[in-house]
Amino acid sequence: MLHKTLLQLRWMSRDVFHALGRKVSFKGYEGTVRVLCLHGVCRNDQKFINSRFLHESQLENLLNGMQGQVHFLSLQEYLDKKVDPNRLNVLVTFDDGYKNNRTLALPILEKYQVPATIFCTTQEVHQDDLKDIAKDTSQSLDTLDMEHGGYENFYGLLTDEELTELNEHALIDLANHGAKHISFVEHAPEEVIEDLKSCEERLNRIGSPFSNVVAYPYGHHSSELFNVLKNEGYSEQFVIEGNPEYDARFHDRLVINPHISTYNQIISLRNGRH
Image (tube, rainbow, N blue to C red):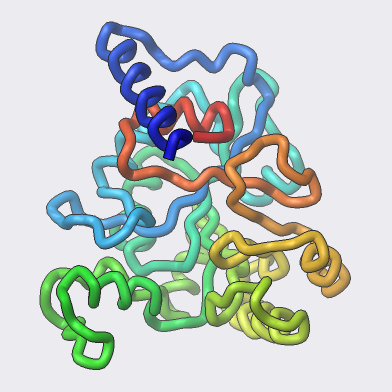
């Protein structure tokens, strides 16, 4: 509770200084690499059902706010460490493979020519989001009416046809988020490998060269799992600790916070932590 209160005070004070004219400084971060984790994007007129989504305007403001000051990396450039030594380097990632990554996020990525990596599952809908919609509408999952209420942006995941189209796009890379979005630490290693192999097969059919690059669902991971996955050929593993000093074997990411200002979000990304 104290940590949350201190964070809120820090964000408020930053916004005050920003209103007085202070700009984000990237001095001292030249050549540094950060990885940003997003999930879905919704329309500006839609209210959030959880903290995994951004409004279209928030994504646009974020990318626009970093234009010219940040070098955006493709997944291949990131893995090859082809960074700009004179600027902060950022890899943009999306987890789960929502349809809105294609319909709402992609036009904004195209506008600013920002590459992005989508970590996909093999599901048709995201069960966690259905639970959030049910809670938001006071319905049960058994009686949930998904055809009405304007919630279509919050649960639908990309089809094979849509992923194939995205895989051919110059700005988009597709990678592995497991087939069923299970917590890897709550399942036996054999189940985890089976889950990853299923998603890998889907990505291979689509033609993605990154089917062995993994982002842990929910960010749930362990040192033991790292070794298990590495032995199966999944040596590039992404987590969401939001800590630049975290275990260097993993690729750490900072999860977007839709409830803070663009100014605060850019500073958090620069720092690698909220």
